[in-house]
Length: 329
Image (cartoon, rainbow, N blue to C red; front, side, top):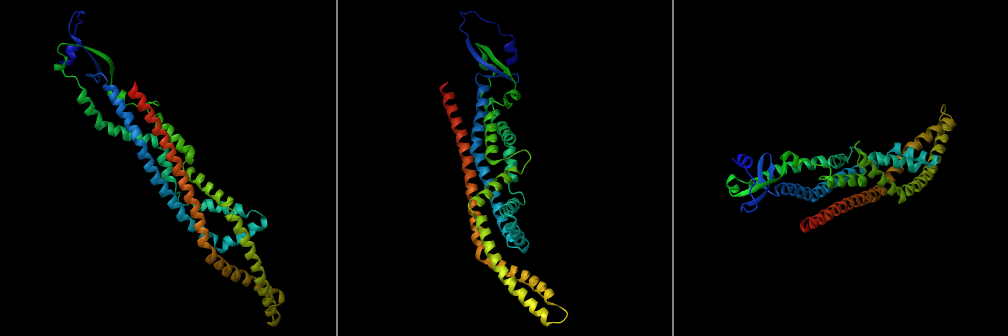
């Protein structure tokens, strides 16, 4: 057997014409010199090939995440044009924290149904998932490499075999930090650019806050504040009319009284005027406001995709530089 041949091999003198054959031993079998590096290089190539796949998958997840967020815009506008929100906004005007009220509610509604959970989970588990995928690929590729490089007993006739390294397949396939540092580094860059953390959900919150900040900076909330003040003035004028009507009714109808009639008139004015003017405001401005918000969301989406593309390209360039050094060595 091959093992017996190696055990019984005796050194020969320098005058011998016996050919020296460098070899490597993996799991007790003898393979051509360079087999270990060939397996490692295959592992390295599979890691490199993963980056375009990762980018493609992340792009899909980004599209899905922002699509879910866009659907939440209508929920925000439903809230915004509700009577409850209207009264809250008016209070905000007089307390001076209208922007804070709208911004907080906007961020909260944008993140309903946790639109970024899948993206968050994918990035956070990136290194583990990619490692498992590469190991599955190697299970198919390694037998081909081993079969091609195995040294049979007949190949040893008239040759002096020098085993340069003893190892196991398990040892070769281990992913050290050095072997896998590119994926780990890429993951850390993605985390930094998208705000993903182990706690989950932070990516969406970070992005939603950026969108909200942009909306505030563009003056959308401020323009809404001015519009609300304008509408509030109109409401006050209409309510005065209703209060006057109520007072007149109170003075005519016995038992009601002028003050009571004025209060009833004010209540009727409040409900009727708020409802009517809110519907008018919605019909005039809802679609415009929706368009502006979605435009900002889509810009943030493209910015995130661009950042990830740059990270991917940076990693691939690093790989190509290593390839050149490897071939030149």
